[in-house]
Length: 414
Image: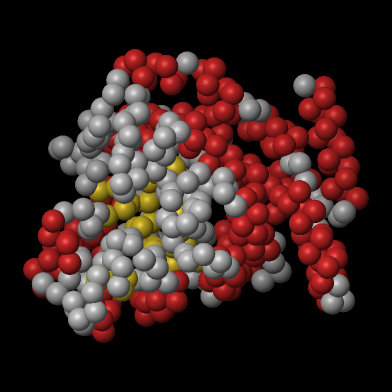
């Protein structure tokens, strides 16, 4: 403990010399929130094979228990996203689900409709050439808007598997028009203050055309739909080499960055632990977010503070809760490093055209060991200094393994 406090004191002194207010940094870290996904606690696996994990949640109640444990260990994961119908109660008693979550010290966050898993959606949902299938998808999304009311949720998270595999399979312009019609019908059904976040993906499962292939398409539709519609950035949904932080900066400036699905990928949408493959990219994304948070423009500050930070990962071979905790910690570390960037010095170097020095100043923040700072923040939050070690020592995992056993599937709230 003495060494930890000494390390923190030394780091705080160094940061103060660079003009960084450590108390302001700690306050921001204490306010940080990362939403975890209910499906990440179940045997949801990858799109090829889900390897069953002993202790994985089989009901929504168990998923909420697990999410509460992650929040208990980290102090910054107070909400959990749900997926419908995966988390649909047998009796549709959503107030009971909300109350159960609150009793565990967490809340329900984003509601995610599922319009990709049924056989009827083989040719798409909102983009489907069949008016009957289009209406079925619209009805389900509107049902999720009604569920938002019951769960006190304000975020409707929309991802679509729609697209085509072959040229000539469908009329591309007509698919665009069908989507715009469907989204316009959904928008009035959102609860007061609710937002629909439109997610994009440049390929897969459709391989010739994807109906929402990039952030530009999602952005264009969000403009047509108005303030209630924004873009959701999934870190895995980009081609190799895409500059995600530039997309983030653009959308922030337009007040159209609605949220993130945090994960990481090496080649495609691998759903790996966020920051595990490219932590520098994660830092640079957070750097743009912090730059907006601390901006003199109040509109830009509000845009940054309204962003929803959500994890979307399917841990397939590494367990469930421990990797979820690690994902939250990686976001916390990236945020801390972005917060300690000496922004006044960086601005001066940029204005002076000092390209190399500006780059060095930014990368020096990335290379800084912020673990003493994070340990101090966790102490102030009343959570373990080492959340992974504390979780492994808690006995929670051995208990759920014994109680739940091995199950390949998961059901709704019980």
